[in-house]
Image (cartoon, rainbow over the protein chains, first blue to last red):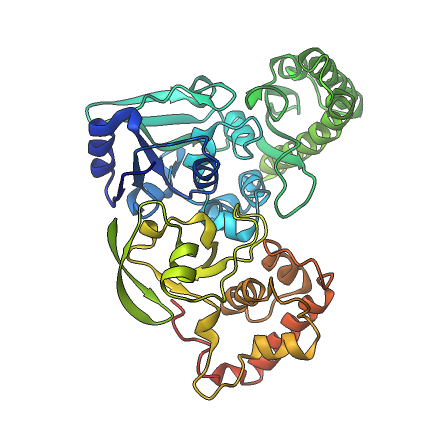
Length: 291
Length: 169
């Protein structure tokens, strides 16, 4: 039963309260997951700290070669931000693919990351961009790759006195691109049945220097797909290679989801979602070569 | 218990709310603004939609204490002193966009938030704008047509309706 509630406007206030109450406290931002879980009795914090009015962690900005997104930035803000309208449109597409306008106006990137749902929609593009998380506590601050932050289904490396302040990733370089694709059931509120993000970096001859492929809802947590990444390395990405890469991913899926009822569906679906994300990434990479 | 200050339909007020009350509970139970409906209680149906600081939210997914310092508009904000309807409400009636009416307050507020931001929406914009509001009766076509009609009316001078801009941030 919630006994004490706080609405904070500065991160220091939030960190001080977390320091005092540690595991008894829950940070509340958009509330689109937490309020449901509390009402269902799955989560029973004694203390709620509302950070949804904390403006300084709402930033979306370029710092040198990096793009920083504050943890209380909402999906709507990400979807509409000028930084994500062109080459990084995959980030906006991932944000737009979530829930309804009402949900996107409240739900935050920090909530999406810290709830660590296997189907969290922003995680695949952030993983493909090798995002770093900035974790703050009253006393310390640490930097952790997002891939290390996500440790399992709804499990993260966040300590009870810590909060996620922001994530950042490097801007796209020349001849690189990012794609995102998702398969959901109903558009407005679909939880990803399957989602995928692909980052590509090509050399001057069109050969793949680096491929980073990340999946959502294809295991216990959103994750990088190392086998298909290795396969794409040094390849000139044409139809044949795309077919073969899709088969590599199908094999990975079959192994990972062996015995699961969703396997017959997902082993097919994963190929289409992957092709879609890959072709977007390829298109952006080639466009950024010309510009 | 927590004391919060907020603006509801243009009126500033100070309220004492329970720690576990949602904005929806406060609107309906404390303020008797029962135009805001509770449907699913988990952010799927949009019947509890209100406009908070200019953006639509599900009031079942906002804790009351989170509304401290915010400006809220409910469907009652569209009431006018002379009893005339807001152009969106009028269009809903004329186009047959209301059947059982349970989704209507939320639907109208989603349409209002959309038209406040984009007075000339495409059909796709309207469909997206109301995509967080479920209607089990109409099949949505009539609702989309009503919003199109309201947009036309408001462009032609319907904005002068006294409450069209009231409380919009």
